[in-house]
Each structure stands twice: as C-alpha cells, then as structure tokens.
Image 1: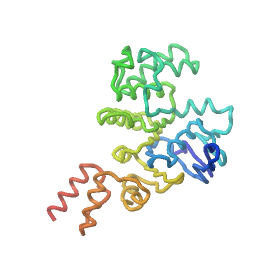
Image 2: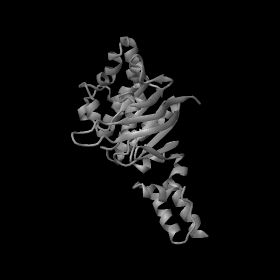
Image 3: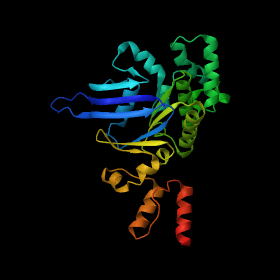
Image 4: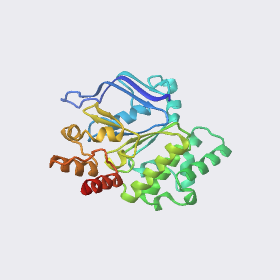
Length: 282
C-alpha cells in the first residue's frame, strides 16, 4: 500500500499576538497515512488536529520539515493546485461551503473552476450526488435541506473534483445524531467502495471506533496510534491527557476496577453486550 500523506520533522507555529510568546503547534512531527485507509484523528481542542488537517491540503505550509501529498511537496508553489485537487476538504459548517441556490449547481462549482468540460461536469455531478445518496435532491435549494443532507452535498462537491483523499474537519460537530449517522455512512461507503483515503478529524469516540486507524493528538504530538481496539484499551493514558473513551470502554473499565475481568476492546454496543452476557453467565 502506497503512502498518501507523509509529514517529516514538521514544525509549525501561529504568529504571536503583541506581548505574547509564540507557541509552537508542532515540533518534529512524523506521520504517515496509507492510501485507501480510513483514519480518525482525535484530540481535545487546541491539540493541533485541525492545524494538521490544513497541512494535508496545503492550506497551511510547514515552518520546518515537510509535508508530502502523494509524493508532492506542499512547499512547492507550482504543485499547490494539483495538491488541492488531490486532497479535498470538508469543514464543520456546510453552509460555509454552499455557493449556489440549486444543489447540482453547487456540486458543479468546483469542477467548473478547475476548467472541466461541461459534459464531464454533468457526469461528475450526477456520480457524486449518487455516491452520497442525494441524487433525488439535485434540483432542490440547499438551504431547505437538513444539516446532514447539507453536509452530504458538501462532500459531493468535493467528490466531483475526483480527489484521491478527503479530509473532514469535524464534519458532524453541528449535526444531530441522525445527521451524524448519515455523514458517517457516506464517508465509510466512499472509502470502502471507491478506495478514497479518508481522514476524519473528530472528537466523537463513536465515530473514531468506526475507522481502521486512530491517531490521538496531544499538545502537538502523537500520543498514541493504532487500531481503535489498540488505542482505546489505553484508558488511563487517554484520561491523563484529558480525553474521554467510548462509553462501552468506560463501563467495562469501571467494572474491572471493581475486581472483574472484562475485555476493554469490546468497543461496539454489540461487542460490549456480548461481553457482559458472557460475564453474567460465568
């Protein structure tokens, strides 16, 4: 499996305000994300996860070290357009990404600006809307849609650019549980069926456990990295960093502190229920 995104010795700091000391966000950050994978990046506010996401799309550029996107160095200005075509970004508020009064026109906006021929745009728009399950809404007004539907339209707009990777920066933060599930099913399907590399920035543990890999950020560094089961069994490490764990893990952890022996890697509700049933029968 090839590398989609790689950071080497990444350094970055935001400019300091008057009278304040400039604090680095990253020092010597090394990271690799494999092509075709579904990765969740977790961390509390201010840990650097959104800043990292913006480096993946070259919205932000390194102060030191490097970021390579499918082998392309983001420091090379001549490659920026190609990098941003390759890595699409979806943000928290879908309203900020809506630019047209009709859904299909909104999805067509990015490929039009890339100079894609009209017949090809039509094909891409239809395919993108079908991919997110919103084709029947192609002639609707975006402002009349639900939050989950709007976010799926925003994702369709990115898909129409035919990226190899999609970075979603807390895309469900403003959505209700139904809208969150709509978006999660959409990005899982894109990863599974189209092989698109998905990087999900989130603070929802229930979303992170659906990824293939979880990267936990803390104070600008990688605290731990592995499969969801490998990461979330490290309950005390995560709690010491001020982070939560899935509710299922929390329950099993407290039972174990009372002297029981239950598997902390039973992350889903179904796995947790099976573990509790087996424990009750023992």
